[in-house]
Image: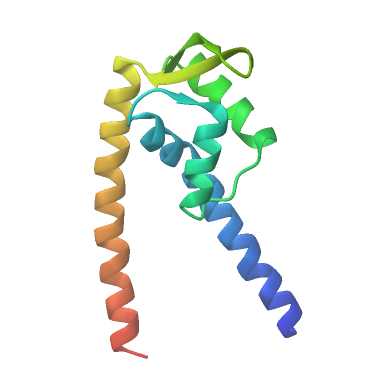
Length: 120
């Protein structure tokens, strides 16, 4: 395998890892309060989690369908009313569970990384 294919494999793996964590990260953002979709996008991008509207809106719809999110319409000074998302009680519970899982996983992964680094 040449370097070009290796680079593609790395980028593909990185993209898949980020995609897998996107719902968790979105819940972390919304868990801070009420958020308009573009504010969610901006917060994710500010934290180096690149996401586009075409990914975010279907995910928000899925999370709402799973009763993890709810929204309210609020008037906007710059156009039509906007949807502001917030966590439901079920969403808060799910976020707490995901956070516990994430902390457990990071401990395990960091332990493996230390062992790897020690041996290389």
